[in-house]
Length: 376
Image (cartoon, rainbow, N blue to C red):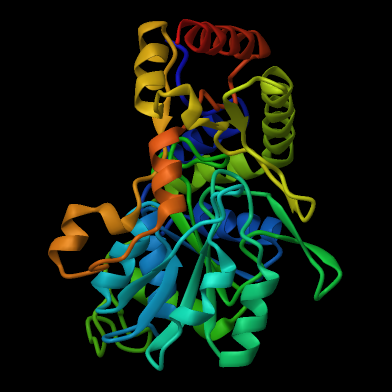
């Protein structure tokens, strides 16, 4: 079976883990946590990083840090992982949805302004499958309404966005008030499980550090005026993360090279659309994604089954938040429709995308998909 994703662990991971074991520092108090925070935040171009247990915790911590709470509204795309909604709901806030751009699968920015109310406190820009959100429209909305922007940067480690307003290429995760990322095993930088909050704002950093550590008072331990959680990352995880960050430019080069090779294999093939890269984006092709033309009269689920039978793993696209039974049972998104999200969910999937993937694997995968289309 050609796996969907395998991490590449050929740097200092073992040496740093041995250092943790030899020193006895395996908890969140170990020195690798701070080193990892500084290294990843520095790569993104920000002063502060706050390492946490996973990407969902990072989203919740980031929202807490910017003051999101009971009764607030956060605008986000329907087409994303449920973690984005969970982070809001745990703080008593309400997720408010917009549809996606059918080309990039990122949020449809022209729908945002009509969803703003006097309860709107933030917009969550979720970069998807390695491609950035078009951020300039969000920055204009921020300036007009005073709404905070949070980026979900889990799928775009090292991706860049060209901002016409600033005339610069900016790294995803550093274009907003605060950002949250994940270091799950399929991410470009991994710690197995883990996440980080990133910001240039000292106050937000302090609030994030407090929230991940049970809101202990630094001047009086075991005395609490706010409720937080134990979202601390271990020294062991951070040791792996630091070794990964040391290789991130190499990892991005591999991802882009494989992405371009995938693109060449699918160029001109009827019925298959490979993921796009807009002129204002430098994608890192986190997951090599395709979308089927409905004229083929098959959906992504059928292609996924065919691939599995031939020894190729794949994953379906996100199912929109508006179609999630648990969220609907809570009275959310009543009567709302997001046709672009539905289309992507029905006809999109991603192919093997790990850093250990070889071009010969891609040749095999493309040949199998050719066989599938030929059999229709």
